[in-house]
Length: 115
Length: 215
Image (tube, rainbow over all chains, first blue to last red; front, side, top):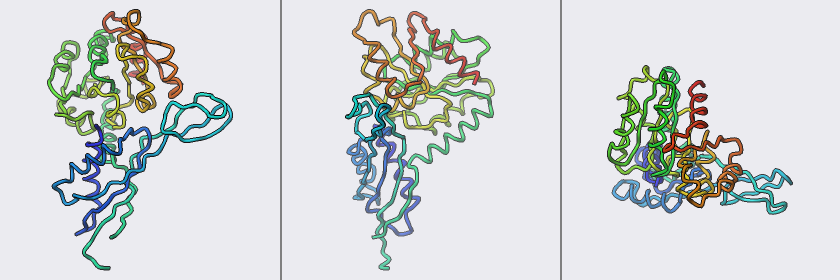
């Protein structure tokens, strides 16, 4: 369950970007297929980690990128949740492409400043 | 409500420490391996058999990651002069800060090769940079021939894959061609090194390792 370690790194990262007096209400992440992140496990880890913290109740949204495939036979391209896949047109097994990207994209922050 | 754009790697802090570690390894002329495999795949047995079989002039240190106990370090200490046990107290993988802490107990200047035996796990350790120069994935015959297909990130990230416990091949249902086919679909060029630590059949692995150390 590397999701808990990721959540710990994330919490430190978020705090480094929070404006003074800001309260975190949400955060948005993107993960490459090769990170093998279970979104529910990450959300659970985030809730557990922030339960007694100022970030409690903040909602974590994860965009999980699929594996990318390109057929060496017919040149067709597609994405899939499966790393081991075959071309739907010509049936050739495809080499999956996916990366270990894990990016904090943005945060939703509530502040007391009415402006 | 304000939206704050960030666009920053979540594991950037780990990666920074890993980059510093890599600089230290390079400055000391130490080649470093991260060995990843499931519990019981034979990582420790592989090291126990490998280290005595390497040229005697090659100085090897080992960092061993486990949730608990220093049993693996005790085993490896019989064949390596420098061994450090890292207990993660529940953590399912090593991170760069673990390695940094472990290095405090090692004399890098007296090493040519540092082997990091990661916590037994085929998934969690794969995405973490430890400052290594290569990642080695370990699968065993006992685990079954379908494990590479079920663990694409390790197959994609590995610089070499070791198939351990080859002495069991005559006795268990293990389709060697199927095992290799899944690997080749994902990583066509990765070396697949079949070994038996029990029998001392290590030749392809030792050849790869000596070439790796030579850089």
